[in-house]
Length: 273
Length: 307
Image (cartoon, rainbow over the protein chains, first blue to last red):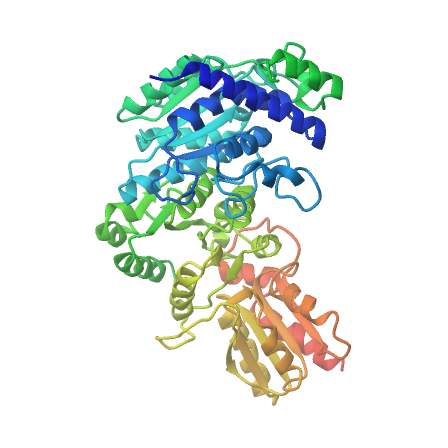
């Protein structure tokens, strides 16, 4: 049985670590990090088969954060999952630190599978990894997280076509569908809807879930695990800035840095003592 | 060069399970033998080069040795950011092959020509750039690239390139190959323009000059050791390449030469800085762009006449 209470606690803890670090290091993209935090907790603490003491195990599942600007969330969850100690995060955001605003290359930090940040790169990389695993006879899964804004990029749809043709059933994307991109509503800027139907039309198994409900997330991931002959697209409906009332669905938090008072308010709302 | 490339990839793949050739929907018949080595050694990625380059990087990060193959503009400038970020930044061991480079596809017009690829790619850290001049150099370059840990860009021609070297040539990354020595002037040549450079060199030999010719199968890293040696062995350097005069071998040599107080004079022979708007074959286009044997002779003779 999945301990949903524990996942909930981990999610709240992750969200607070992100907010506190953003304040301390003056690093942005809070809204984008909070919208995918529950997804990251379900992946790293339930779904992905990983061994933090063997980060280069060729049989490991791969997770690529294609929406690389949510790196602050990834850096925290990798520490929480034990890929490195919290002390490594001490120089976060300072000159000379490897913790920049986007993930570094895999050679620089355990647990990082790809240096993302320029949007539209993670899915082609994931397709390459899924093809490699199939050639090598491995059974591992490749999960790629995309932003809805990121789906503006043509390379995503090039990769979607190839993954469909190759029937890459060990490949899953999760779209953190928070309905915003950097400067506005994603649907108003580019006609993203109907999103699930688009992926279906490209030969994918498309599933829509609530991206803040751990049970729903895990149900979606389990559907991916049992799908044969096609890749899976999980459209996770999320809220940018989720978990903190004054950040929720407010796109100012794409770039805004929280004040000390705002960190305290968030801490209370998230129930972190 | 294309056929020799396909044969050599088949041979390498039969010795190494990690090798996979990704094609941008070209060369389907060219790689029949490779497919016979194993279906897993060939993947047609369709007409979607940005994705193909990312897929190759993902494969390399998972331990494979992918080779990306399509016509030069589409395997370079079309997917430049994927080369920069996915391949170079992550130091992924991908061999990027541009086929029909330079003016090999002159008849197809500027969309299929490539006279700026080296200039652009030379600026990317971690990328090795190889420009074989004939089939033995190509085979040797491919073998060297396969042993190299990190990305390689290999710029090859089309077909019918005259043979310069004997078989069983060995190429070391970063090492030039001296074909001949000459104390009056030395041609530094990269790639399949070599026959034009040799013809120009021959003309100057007939005119009584002592002429050397060096092949540069690797442009980056550049063999500067040999350049330093040449300072005391020759009096004039002439670079020749089927590439624009901005940013290629000539520029690389000029960058080496810039801080030297007493260096040799340098003539950079490269294509003039414009797009061609008329039809012609490769020989015609070489003349048009000022890189045919005849034009090389003219430019060098003008310089020599003025000294």
